[in-house]
Length: 236
Image (cartoon, rainbow, N blue to C red):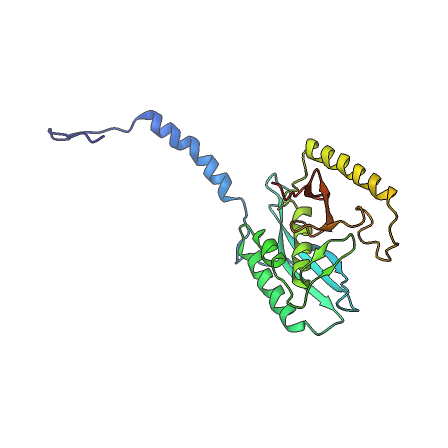
């Protein structure tokens, strides 16, 4: 609301309450300015802590080793956090050398940029190999080698607290356990041929591939395809 002043201003004073409020906010601002955040000009320490992950696919006789190194910010304070700083991928197989070097440099640059880097997980996991993907141990489908690198990155970000686990709630888990037991009971009564691949042994024989979690765990329950691993249902 605007107030029109018709008389000449000859004096003014600052309200005491406003001054006290400004002084109260000053220490908070000073504390925030001392908190170190991830940014491009952050110098690499001489020593970084990290973790290495092994990727063994049926596409190559040699495994890939993904190493993610982290930097610890505000060490020893209540604001201490661990953030990814760089990534390296090594293998005896030199077929993918060029794109692996490019990928590690780009991902490392995104890490050092600061901010939320969790979007990299979905970007990498959405890459599909035109020659087809493969099943890893446990029956989970990987659409490409790049997608499995994204899966490894997700594991690491969860381990350092940048991504939170989204488990099923108690009722969903109980329902899935019940339906899984029923399906296994029916499967035990039906003779099936032995399967040399035990990657899907945790789920009933004949389970279909889930499009959400890429696991062969979808079975028909109550007339609807439902995943025993993540709870995805075709009926909504």
